[in-house]
Image 1 (cartoon, one colour):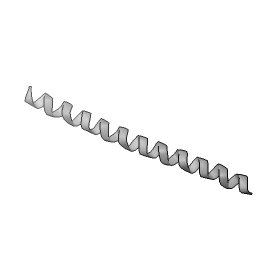
Image 2 (tube, rainbow, N blue to C red):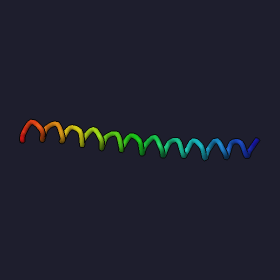
Image 3 (cartoon, one colour):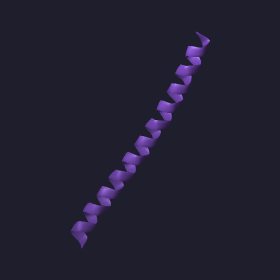
Image 4 (tube, rainbow, N blue to C red):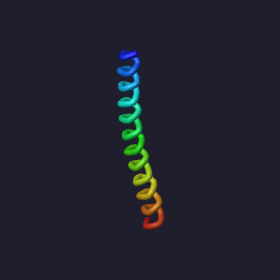
Length: 43
């Protein structure tokens, strides 16, 4: 039973890391699209 808790802990940490990574990548993509739209209207 202890090994299952360790495995679940590892999976939780990986999920947490992936979630943060996806959140930052999504934010970056939103900024890139925003800049692209603004540049299209300015030039």
